[in-house]
Image 1 (cartoon, rainbow, N blue to C red):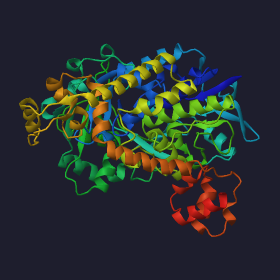
Image 2: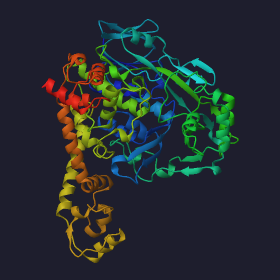
Image 3: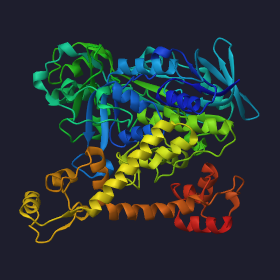
Image 4: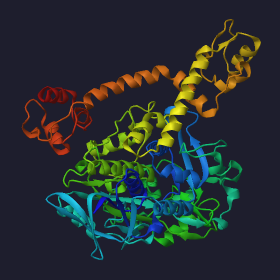
Length: 615
């Protein structure tokens, strides 16, 4: 009897299994092949807008993805640096082969974790309660809780042109029986679609026709445990390249739209709005003369390049024409053709905020099976599902992150409150408190919670406490450092566009000015604390007013979240609430007044009446 059984060793499954095992729970990770753990069947990268902050949050909660991403990165790049810190986000180009090897080695050597290389057939459910998992060879694994993280492998079909083939990503087997097992238990499933671009042999690309896209020349990392010697030096990092589609590309696609699985009627599922196929881009954005594409290396051990932005479900012969119409790829060899994939997902409206299913007790779900897209979204969900499964075994309260605490909290709340009809992608625009959910303050927001629940080691927690102490001491120094209004200060201020000053001031007050930095003042003051502490203090000082306002707004949210809604409320017959509100409240069954207020179609007047009835 296991405490936690995790089905699937993708990005969600890995984090779920690692979290449960770190919390001293006897955990089984059920996967067809450990060699495929942490597979990247699509983009060979980790991070990006919003997603990169999720990876930082996973690190603060003791997760594995940030460490693996740092140690197997081919390139580091900080995005949105010309904008405010609320949208800064790290992205790394990953070595997909090294990433899988890192995950396999780690999983194989983790205490309390048993890897079982078998295929799940069905869930063992009795009286709406999970009892374990039945494998295709008849083996039964008994478990107190089960975390389902099957990604895009449930009843999946690979689609090209007019042909559909039963298969999972990267020619792996699909699981046909699991969906039916879920539906028999009363769990709703629906069809989704995603896709992947072609891969071409790198040596056959003419890079002279492309624009070089280097990384950021600085020490960057997802995990605070990563040291400079753990990552590739900048001068050894790989570069990506930028190209654009051509009029010839568009002509080929438009003349063959009827051959695309997307437009031939073969696809039944809904595709991702924010990562559409190239043919979908041409239809939806017909006025655009060209679309940008990035050529990204997949691994140092492979001679393949990923054509990012060129996802398609065209037949192979049409793909040959399309790829050879691109600059630098006129004579390239296609190593792997693009395809679309359609699969079963679970309606996330049947999920509680702690990621437990509402229909089947002790069944938790995470990742693309919940209707999301992206490795980072999957890993964040997997971590939370693994933590909550372990807490459920111990009979402890669930661990739920609020929208003002983490992008992970925003994502899970969106899923279980609003649901989704297309692959959900996390965006910075989905978060109301972007200035609170920054790349630089993930530890400050979450690490102590990770330590308290048992996912973060005491050594890591002690190091964090020392860092916080160093930051507070640095702030005290800045508050006491008086900068004289001498020629050196005025020369510095003038260089930044400010008028000279005739009075001195505390350094902490000088930092309130745009572009003024601790490093820039260091030649005058002799005070410098290093890049990371400097940056943290500068953000706090320059954005203090905005941060305080966001915190006040968040406190109002917390008040509504503290009002619990009983599970047995009869929404259908509530008086003085609109019919639409009654229907949606009954469908979602929100757990708090705050969650109820975020359901689409619920008006403030409905919430006011509901609050009165509850109180």
